[in-house]
Length: 261
Length: 289
Image (cartoon, rainbow over all chains, first blue to last red; front, side, top):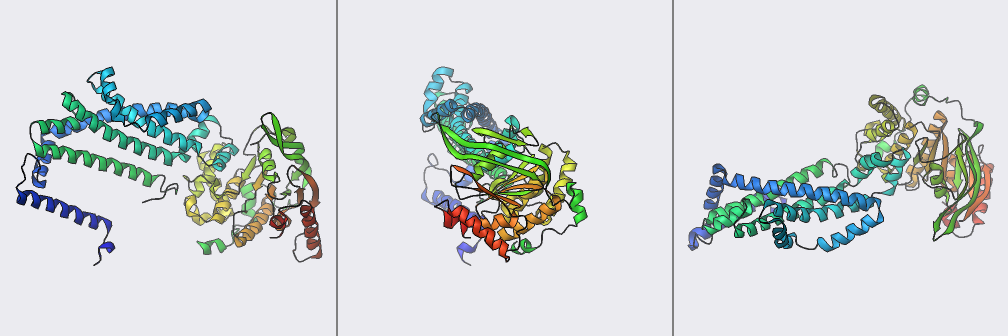
């Protein structure tokens, strides 16, 4: 049977198993120091232990709470900016200027300032996350609003829709593909940023999230736990991507507003 | 899907349609005071305090039950004029009034069917596109859904009622747009080259269907096109506009001109061609199709 004729799930599963096997064999055969590299079996053990003892779950919860709060604030700020950008020219100018300045800046770069302003507290993390997610969301949503097809807007007005109802019933659904892709990018930025920020916090001796968990495990040379933390981060990333894909399938892809993959 | 398109869309009986629209199907004759009055209307847009005129000065009237065509070369401002009647654009000067009331803003009493296929809400199914329009204009949910079903049946799309717009062909999309506009029971239907993006066969089929629907419902139609053929097939009267900034060249009564094989039809067509040909460029595009 030809490789390319196999279903995607099968192809990927085979590759995954192969990689894990090679990895296991390498660690078993090469005699690499367990202080540098762990075998898949040890990692799985540490992963299960971490979740059963509740240590990893607690760390994950802390990280997700801070991320959630940061995303929420970022979304609110983005909503306010987008509203001004949609209705006024100066709002649009402000948004474009701020986005072009702040979006290319890796959000983690402002962590030292955040620590200076908020101390070694969760507030500093929330601030950095909010900054990381605000700009991709704001620029995407405002692009979505500005590029709504003019015909459909005229149809809405022809029905007598005005003001908030026109925004809610026509503009917002029409801009949904952009909104979702903004949230997706925002979430991806936020997720990377919070792990990085927590690692720095870990070095500085504070916090309790996944980044801290990894750094702590390294400090005490519990290398399989370092890997278990990384696996957790990757799995959450995959899960949230799946959630977005699910939302897209049920909405914009179903409506033919975005082609499926 | 193609095969379904071939099916005749008006399967319902006359009685059913009369119930649907509440209009007298025998009323194909136009009558009474003008429904729409376009009085010395000038259209344009202002740039740096100067007015760029698109439509110089246009006056005409539309009576109830009439199908009136705005015919003119591309870029003559006929679509702009339709948008002004729809209430999207304010005239620079002059008056547009419907039922003796001056227009203020867009409204469902002048339901618009656009040329673009994307005039349907992509996030709503065919039936929901129609039902939503009715709910917005004040109907109860159940009433709206029932009426939507009837108008979708009238345009021959019952089998596609639960599809989303992206699952429809161009011709079907335009039919949904027509169903939605008719369901609003407007004072008049404003149609902006609704068949302009369709292939020739679908186009001529939809022209026939529109004529039948108009006859059955007695709906008043203002129809914009640059095709003489289409103007003659659909219109009762044709308002011929010249090159931009445009004026009314002539209003031609073609009520009795229907059969393309008659001497009369050929004569009127020649006359319209000459009217448009007098307008210079774009003649080939506008006339010979």
